[in-house]
Length: 55
Length: 209
Image 1 (tube, rainbow over the protein chains, first blue to last red):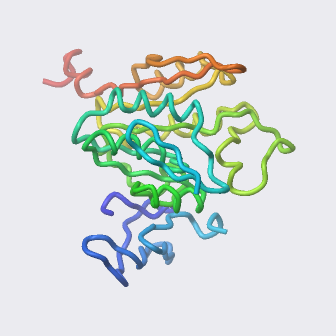
Image 2: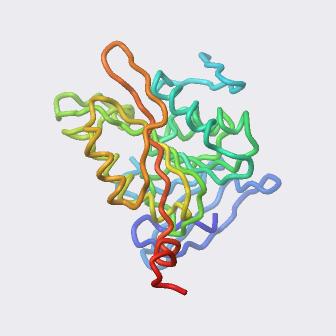
């Protein structure tokens, strides 16, 4: 998780955990303050695509 | 559900995700040949997760994979591979932390009318000259690989081999073809690149004491 960056500005992300199983984050978000953009974590998978590429 | 078993790994397949083929087997063999216990490995464009799954079924390594296709990311996760949805390296900080980075690129020269519908196009479409993602990979990979780290890149005879050698040298790699196999209509090969350590080079030339 510490090597992940915002795909738009390469800046740091703030992790917000909504649910966890043992050490694994199941749902949550990674937030970039600079771009005001959220990257969702769903079912254990971070979606690090910029919004226009997510579809 | 259809699955493939190869070198101790059982990999489930799914619709809209590239089905492992000769190229995948060749790159999996090379990856197993050069990976060592304890390595941190990144696979770009993992698809079903086949190569990463083969690797972690045989060696105690720390594997992370990416794909842009949502069905591929789901499939790779179901196959036990830690995967994030990302476009190449775009979600990673430029920290040289991986010991090995593996890529089976989409390499088919593809015109607008050759594109296949949906996410599966990402598995084949290498741009008009087939080089688009190979170039992107070689430009960015040195930012994420530790000095003396290894890249393994699958290349087809559809691609300009000499150009790849040149681009690898330009990116700071010592390149070598380590596996080669002829098939019906193409020859596939695996390029290995070792990222030259700039500080060592400077030390030996006397710039750093």
